[in-house]
Length: 67
Image 1: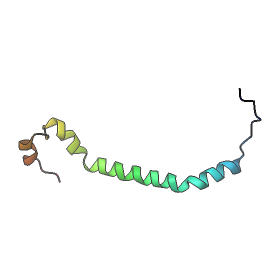
Image 2: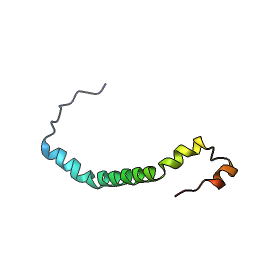
Image 3: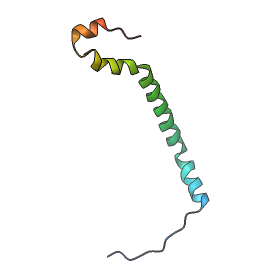
Image 4: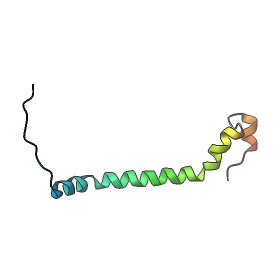
């Protein structure tokens, strides 16, 4: 078995270092989420109409116009 070790306390500086090392990653994820949400908002009616109007069929898709 592994031997028990001492618990090392984390102080605010450790949290700051962790955040500082990963803030670019956080910002990248935030911007990616904003981009996806904007795309989803733009095509929201298309996704709804895809099932309501059977747009997977060619004849229905030709009649459907995207803004």
